[in-house]
Amino acid sequence: MSAITTATQADIQPSIDDLKAMAQVIRRHIITMIHAAQAGHPGGSLSAADIVTALYFRVMRLDPANPSWPDRDRFILSKGHACPVWYAALAERGFFDRSHLTTLRQLNSILQGHADMRKTPGVDMTVGSLGQGICAGLGMALAGKLHGKDYHVYVMIGDGEAQEGAVWEAAMAAPRWRLDNLTVIVDNNGIQNDAFTAEIMPVEPLADKWRAFRWNVIEIDGHRMEEIVPALESVKAIKGVPTVIIAKTIKGRGVSFMENVPAWHGAAPNDAQAQAALAEIAEGLR
Amino acid sequence: MSQLHDCRDAFSAALLELAQGDARVVALTNDSLSSSKLTSFSRLFPERLINLGIAEQNTVGIASGLANGGKIPFVCGASCFLTGRALEQIKVDLAYSRANVKVCGMSSGLAYGALGATHHSIEDMAWTRAIANMVVIVPADSIETAQAVYAAAAYEGPVFLRLSRMPVPDVHGRDYQFEIGRATWLRSGTDVTIVANGTMVSRALTAAHLLAQEGISAGVLNMATVRPIDQAAIVTAAERGPIITVEEHTIYGGLGSAVAEVVVTTRPTRMRLLGIPGVFAPTGSTQWLLEYFGLTAQNICEVARDLLRGDGHHG
Ligand SMILES: Cc1ncc(C[n+]2csc(CCOP(=O)(O)OP(=O)(O)O)c2C)c(N)n1
Image (cartoon, rainbow over all chains, first blue to last red; front, side, top):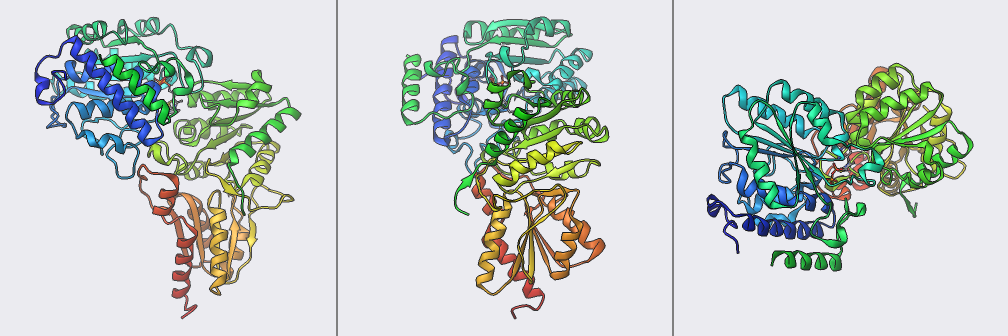
């Protein structure tokens, strides 16, 4: 299909169109996995699909054959409930066989209900309790500085997750060490568990908040590959400050009946719904 | 023991009733309205339902302030995050300060089986029980859950109420009266006592029933309050013979430890502690995990037989 479906071919710089196609492959896996497990979080997995694809297939420096390569770039999905998107990207990138994907949440699966760094190749941080991944990412970036390494650390958080105090403790700490090797991406889909974030506990204006904490702030449409790639590729040139990319996204993106519907935060599609979703995703592939 | 109940329903019905009769009752949550079964509460009392978003520390801290202002806050959310993230607020703002706040931990133990170890809450009894001034209640069924909500509201001070989401049968009669700090004999026995709480009580009863068919007389003691613990009931059990404790929790610091602390300092007897043996549980369904860790009636029987064999009982 595209030039980036196998690990070896990933050396070839994939085009924006290749990435768009891969994002749909990832979306297909997300639906298949959550349908197979009959449990999981489709909404926040789908909203993150385009950004995670860009990271794994174009932006990050990785060696799937050597997941603990010391010079690798790191990614932490701090909003760990969306791990199907992470697992799908890791499998497509060649960290483990795709056949594992449908074992999501099963006993003895390498794909636990929330990502476990001791079980899944390529996962650098155990996640599931919100507000923790960003602090660990800061530590990884600090270690990189202390060791004189040039790897970059990317952390994705949710807009709901931004309600956790620890997020802002990290936001305060990163500029203190001028961690320009740390990039936080906010998957700003506007929905949390119970309802719309603006109704539960507003987090906006996010850009102003991060600016006030002295971060380099970039705002993008988190579904336009033409904006995602340049934003992610620009951060390595920024010196002396950490970057936050605030990505406007749609929860459930790519499956019309899931889009912007809070109920799809943590519900699995039934057979008919999964079929309909896969058909729409296939349509988007063309 | 036939129909099964998710005790969160009894919890929310009791809370609603309390709120209707007492304007001081407020509910707080951390973006877990529906999993805490607070949807009707929020419809009836929108201004008394305070949803702080995903911010457990803030939620518990605010509850202590509300208590200071004369409210009776019930803080509701998944037990793993509520007790884990906000433990120091529980210790200082609630327990040390003796704030009149009720922390209601939902889906505790292995109830979130397939979500993995981050969501399993198998340390919460130990954490809260270790803190001075805390009252720790783990109700066994829907009847006791409702009673515990009323008792917690009537009690002036911090309470941790540990609930599951796994449906369980009722083990108490309609006339049952829960009292903080008082354990209940659900079955008397002369050979061995099974001390359990929460979701494990009905399994202990089933085990006792099965053992009776083999001629083993097993008592069942429901230790719904873990702190303050019912010392007298434990001593009575210890005088009768060996004790098996059963908890959906790590055996490090939970119910088994609480019972053992009393046993070794008053009336030493042989004990077996059933629970999660100090490991993180894997991802898996709740039922599978309970079997995996031997938290079944069959395994309780097995352990009882083994204990009594050691006692010279039954050959
Ligand atoms: C500390 C903590 N509290 C509560 C939860 C339960 N929880 C899981 S996902 C979620 C909502 C997350 O919303 P958001 O961060 O916006 O993620 P997204 O919408 O992108 O899925 C909640 C409350 C949790 N995982 N961790």
